[in-house]
Each structure stands twice: as structure tokens, then as C-alpha cells.
Length: 197
Image (cartoon, rainbow, N blue to C red):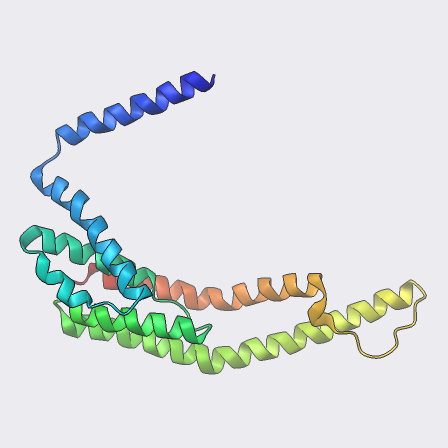
């Protein structure tokens, strides 16, 4: 059975190679240079790197596809401002996108939508998360106290529910639910950015 799977995978690879032989020059250029752009985009995000200087080595269709690859990486690196690192990464990605996109007006309009979303996340969203945390803690404390009472145990002092695995599980689930509305909008904005030239 193992040999058959290997042979099948080999056959699939051979079919792909045959199809590549039928590909156009344009497709081969895209296949070569989009990954190059992705590598440059990752390097730019991870380190202090002259992204725009690196583009000088490409022209024509190669440059177009390198920019496409870079853009895909930059858009993927726009995220909710959970931490300072996430904020810096997002800002860096958005700043580069502003420079790479040809339609500056549309690009700035979408980036402004992102900024508003992030401001809301940091203000009202933060308040929602704090209220949800307090409510969950109170509810969890009550449940633990009731459970202890039913088992005939006396609870002395306050229970630190934040160290309870079940509490942490419920809190992570609640955070995901609270973040989902932001992530949905972010996904729409990212899609919009992708379509801008």
C-alpha cells in the first residue's frame, strides 16, 4: 500500500510537470517571482531591511510579481493590536503598503478603516474585554463556591480563579468570540487592499 501511495504521488508530480511544460512565459514569470517577493516581504517584516531599494533589481513583469508577493506578506501581517510587537508589525506593514500601492487614495482609505478599527479595539474593545473578564471571574467564583458547598467543603478566603485551567479555557473562548467581530472586518479590509493596484 505504501508503494502505491508513493507511486501515486510521483504520478501526480509528473502530471504537474507536464502541465508546467504547457504554461505560458507569463505564468512561469509569476511562479518564479511571487515567491521572491514573499521572501523579501518576510525579511522586511522581520528585520531592518531596505525593501524599496531591493526592488531596484527587478523590472517589468518580474517587478510586478515581486511586488505582488511582498504585498501578500504585508497584508497577512496586519493584525489586531494585542501586543506592542503586533502594533509595530502592523504599522510597518501598513506603511510599506502605502508606498507599494499605485492607487494611493484608495489605499489610504482602506488603511484609515484599519486604524479606526484598531482604535475601537484599543478603547471600547478593551472595556468590553475587561467587563467580560470581571463577569466571567465572578461567575466562575460563584460556581466554584457552590461546587465546594455541595461537596461539603468550606472555602476559606478568595479563590484565584485565573489559575484554574477551566477558567483559562473559558476566557480564551470568550476572547475569541469578542475578537471575531474585529477579525471579520479585518478580513474584509484585507480583501479590499488585495484588489487595489
